[in-house]
Image (cartoon, rainbow, N blue to C red):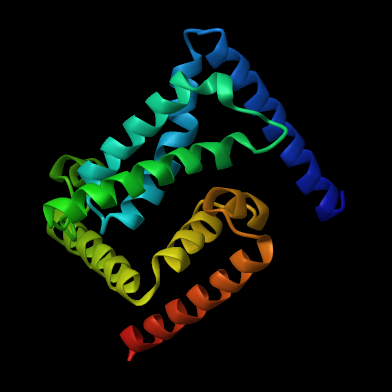
Length: 202
C-alpha cells in the first residue's frame, strides 16, 4: 500500500475513533472519560511540562484542568473546524497562558528539574536508581537549557509537531498561525536545537 494511502487510512481511523469518543463524552458514557485520559493525558502532560521548565506537578495540574474543561465544554467541539487533538491542545495552551500570567503576578519560577521519586522507581525497573535519576535530571536540564534558547513560539511548535506529532495544519490551529508561519518557526527551532546539541557534544 502506498505511504500516502496508509497515512490517509490512519487519519480516517483516528477521525472515527475521535468521533466515537466525542459521542461518548456528550452522552456521559462511563468509559468515555477514562478513554479521554488514557489517550491524551500523557501527550498533554509532555506538552505542558515542556512549557513549565519540567515542573511535573504543575504539568499534572494543567492536564487535569484541561480534561475537565474538555468534558464540560464537549458540546462546543466542532469536528468540522478542528481535530479533537488540536482542540484539546488549544485548551491546554490557554491554561498554560493563564498559569504564566499567574506566575508573573507572583514573580515565581517553577522548579527546573523536578522528578518524582516514585516515578523514577517505577521506571528504573532494576537499574541502578542513582544512575537513572541522574540521567533523568540531565535530560530535563537539557530541555530547560533548550527552552532558554528558543522563543515561546518556537518551543511550542517544536513540541507539538516533533514530539506530539500534530500536523503543521493542526499546530497552526492550536497556536493561531498559518501553516507557512508554523513551518518557519519549526525550521528555526530545529536549527537552534541542532546547534545546542552540537555544543553539548563538544
